[in-house]
Each structure stands twice: as structure tokens, then as C-alpha cells.
Length: 431
Image (cartoon, rainbow, N blue to C red; front, side, top):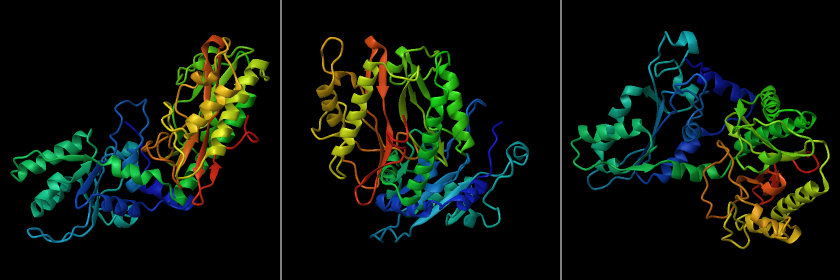
């Protein structure tokens, strides 16, 4: 049986410690994108294994701030009157499951729809029992049958699919109702961060940077990669973060050349380098940071050469950035001015492999990704980086033949003025 802290308590802690995101405004903005339709999202299910910690569905959390399973949010966009349908106002309803008093002996007291002041606590206009969700959707569709073809939700959610089909059946609809992917319009909203989100992202970035700095005292020959990962997790949790934002990657020697090496089973050897890709998630917001260290405390001449090229490639990408113009996550270099292409060209111009070939071919991934509630937040990478976005710049060179892998990664925020600000630090504060 999982243990869940009451979501009302979590909201209270958030409000006491920092400004709270305007979840209501997010739901209103979503409604504006629904074009007369409705959106229904369910909370993440409780994990079946006790080895898995509960984490709320990212889109559901973005809209509600609610951090418990068993709930659903209904958002109905306003609609002007038509020939056969009346005008319809905006509406938002949080549906909560009935309390299970026996389970609460293990999980703590929960809220339900009849809890006093529950709407004020959750900051949702209406709160109703979960069984009423089908009735509410049926009523909306009965008043305007087009609703059946304007439903947005989680397409891979059995609960949403079952709900939509049930409502269509009860209304005698012959056609199968359509279900649009709600993550698309929500992703458009999530791409641009508000000031509260930047504050939360900065908190996660700071905790990650502090933990990374502390690892310099741990990295040494004979130390296991897993031990380094453990020290990192201990540090971020001491700083109040819930968990890593992804499984820590600690790859030394040949493992440093494996991009997503997560086993962390090796033992560091003198003379090798170690890539440490590890960051924190705090208050449901992620960070992402990578540093490469010499196991023996000092790079060899060749390791230092590769390290300096990667650092230079990152700086070249930073220097080339222009809000509203620069692209990223462009590993095939479709854009001549993308941050990927800038870094790739820098590598080719500043170093060779053992066979005299340029180093760009050892840069095997995109230079960055959006960061937010998820460490890889939703993003349309065909569009340039805009003001208000948070993303990574992470060039890397991985040469298996030499057992040298170097990646340097920081998380950046684009201010309303278009300035690029590092949230995770710089060469002056981190190795």
C-alpha cells in the first residue's frame, strides 16, 4: 500500500514556502484552445509495485496542482449560442473519489467532494464526486451533440476511452466519438514558463548544482559509480527535493561514451574520466545538468583537449543564441543557425580523432531539450526558441576508441527581454 500525503497539505506547504502557480488561469487558457469543446484528464494511477513511488501525471498536475490518484478534471470551454444549441459558459470541475476510511489508516486523511470548503482548498470552481463525471459529460453532449466530437483527453487512458464510449452509448450515438490529444494544447501552454515556474525551476537547478559540486569530493579511483549516484541523491533530498528528475547517469571509462548509461555498476579507475548526468526534481519541477570529471583529479592532455572543445562548443552555442530565431534539438542540422549546427561546426574546426578525422561525428545527439514539469518537457522543435522558455544546452563528444566521453550540460532560461540566463551555473561555479 502506497503512502500519500494529503494533497491539501502539499498545497498548503507550497503556498507557505513560495508563490503558487495560477492553476485556474491555466485551465482558462486551455479552454480558449478547445474551440467549443471539453477536456477531461485523469490523475495518474497508483503504481502496482511498492518499489515505485507515485508521481502525478504531468499535464494533470499542470492544470490542477493536485498530487493524488483517483481524481479527474473537466474543463468546458465557453460557446456562443447557435441555431440548435444554447450558449454555454466556461466551466471547470474537479472530480474526487470517495474516501476509503480503512485505506486512510495507511495513507492519511484524504479530501473528497463533501469535505468542507473543498472548492476553496483546491482552487477549482466546482468539486464533485467521481461517479458524477459521466453524468456531467452526458448532459453537455445532450445539450450539444457536437461535444462528442470535441473531446480532448489522454488518448492512451482506458478511463477516458471508456467514459467517452459510455456517454456515446447512453445518448444513442451511432458514430464513434472522436478523442483529441489534450497534451498538444497543454504542451503549447507548458512551453512558456511564468515567473512562479521559473522560481521552481531555479530551485531545482540550484539544488542540482550544489549536489554536483559536492561530488568532486567523492570521485576517486576505486569508488563505484553507484556510490556517486547515492551521494547525489542524498544531497538533493537534504535540500528538500523529492527525487532525481531522471535516473542518475554516472559513467566512467568506457561507460562515459554511452549516452544513456544508467546501470552505474562500474568502479572508477585512475586515469579515466567520469560523466555525471544527474539533476533534481523539486516541487514537481525538474532540472538537468551534466559535468565531466577526471577520476584522478587532473585531466590528461588529451582529455583536457576534448573537454575544452566541448566547453568551447557550448559557449559558441550560447553566444549565437537569438530568441525567436535560434533552433535546437537539431541533430541532423536542418538549420544552418541552430545551436546544434553551431556546436557541431565548432567541434569540427577545433579537433581531430586518432585518425585525423574531425570530431563532429562524435556529437551523436541533439544539443538540448525543453525542461519543466518533465525533464523533457513538451516542445515543437520545428519552431525557434521563444522568450520564456527553459531548455538545455548540452554538447558532447564520445570516442569509444579512446574511452573518452565528455558532456557538459546546463539549463537555461530566456528572459522576457530575450537574454539567456543559466539556471545551473557556469564554468566559474562548477567543474
